[in-house]
Amino acid sequence: MRRELPYFKIEDGFGGNQDWFSDPMMKLGGCAAATACDLSVYMALYMGKSDLYPYDENNLTRKDYVEFSKKMKPYLHPRMSGINRLDIYTEGFGRYLRDAGEEGILMEEFSGERLVSEAKEKVKAQIEDGMPVPCLLLKHRDPALKDFVWHWFLLTGYKEFEEVFMVKTVTYGEYLWLDLDRLWNTGFSEKGGLILLNNR
Image 1 (cartoon, rainbow, N blue to C red):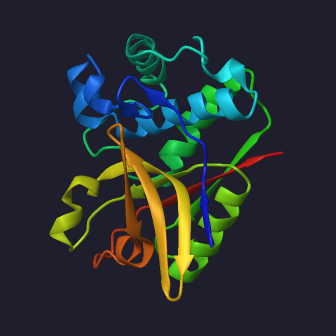
Image 2 (spheres, rainbow, N blue to C red; image 1 turned 180 degrees about the horizontal axis):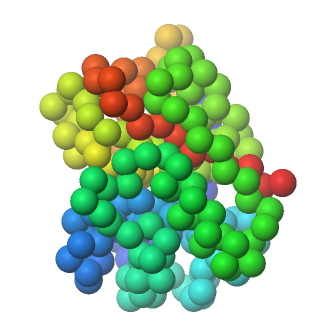
């Protein structure tokens, strides 16, 4: 079984790219804001929620995306410890949604301490409902995942075969398929988790 959500390109990027940000702190620690920007563009494009992206969603440009990141910064701004808790994300992005006049999106925090089997079911349900999944990874014992450490990114697809459950991760204007078991089992007690969104 396999499902990938439609997605958007900005110039050569698959989605937006944190490296484009002009603010040095946002370029360094604006990953949560970048996922929120991408989510907003996605919902404007594919869910008819044009109020969430204050530019032309049918003519996406790098310049507009960078300007949008400046508007998102007050809601999910970089801080010393990063946006290292799920509730910081839901509170910040929730405020953005309300200020944009969007009352129909509900968010639920799904802790990285939950079982990976539960995470697979949640990711599958979200993707089947047409909703990308913000994901926070804190520490990880696998050095090959160093680019995902202390980082927010989006899950926009899954493919399941035999005992393997892969997820399509989107960050820095690129996508990469990763084994969710590998991603979820970090080897550390300090966990991240998922944000589950529901368009009621």
